Image (cartoon, rainbow over all chains, first blue to last red; front, side, top):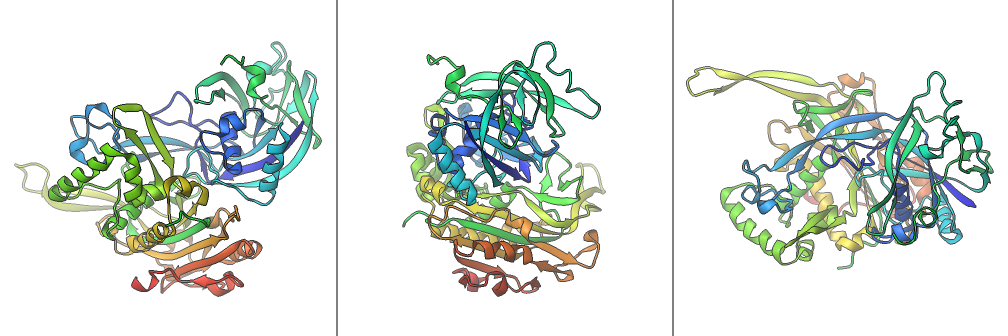
Length: 258
Length: 306
């Protein structure tokens, strides 16, 4: 399988955890769904198109910089209008609550100076186009880190051939789902002083209407280092020697009836 | 008029003296400071608020406007309700801020299908080009705190003695199709950026007085270039002999544009033209002409008016 690899970074990132709406917390890395959106933005695919267009791609995510978080309050427009209707107005007499609240203060969590390496594998035509744009630092839409105002910069790393490796013990440089770990020995060799593993539950696949189709617990080292793990499912080795986990296309994991 | 055909990359610098550029409402309204680096932060929404309010002062129609006076409010409310009820597309047609920054709309009777447009123009959070200090100013007010009290009360306000802030933004030509953003809209925004930080009503309140625009750069790429330099704010530096926290004025240092010059040289074939405005007391090195050598440099159409 051909894999296009590129880096993505910025001052701040926010990849919202699915269970937080009004107190926005962020994941430590862009979930695979966000990677598809980023690929879509570079290729110029509209919000309504990219999920379908990128469905056959395999994606992987590597955390390159130690995960740092910052939190601060932001003053947002209170959007509950009269009759509980959504109404993003600043006119007091149209506000729905008793106190006629105009603004609401929300504490946001951001990733600070995040840096990721993204792996996109599969469909040759789409990948050639992606690699060509990345090489010339071109994009159709503006690329961001989760929210539109968190503008991102990016750099092409290379195009590699990925060879599937059998289950075994490897230094995985990317994040990976906990369920690929060997039940008995999965993390036996990973645990050593200094390592700080985190597990975050993320949506892996979305239906075209954005209904989540599969959630998984995803494991990463908060220091951004590779983790030595024993896996019971195949992983990939690039011709750069790096061993990565790639989420396969949705069709291989989700029954067509969904 | 056609929608935007060229990608624009924007760098805007302004400074703040003894004022609060952007308080954190959940942290005693203190100026936002990155505790690890001492860098001052201003949110993109603060900048867009200033742009929106200034666009209104310049006579443009703005959707997300502040309530100002009882009379004005009633009239505009009728107006806004009219387009709101009829057709959100009309909002797009008439309100420059939605064309610039996007927006989310609810359709009457159908809460579930609000539609949202990503703004073609996006700004990152602004960051200061040097470490800042935060000062707590205490004072007394003459207003008694309760009816039966005779004395005034104490007030506290957090300010930064000085902060030179850089905002970086991109106007994307493809996203412009969805909101019908035009070159004229963008020119209006640039003017609002400059005028708004100079004399807009947002910056003449007590907590904001002391804002001054310093540098505005608009890099206009050729149509279909599909590229931009990225992170322009990282390509400029403020060099001063003083310690960062001791800087009090733009004249105490030189704005180093050599990083920008280097990148611009690499992208010169992709760039159609550049528009630049520098305020009087700013010293830049190398000179603007040298930074954009071999590229047409123009003033903004409204430069003479400011």
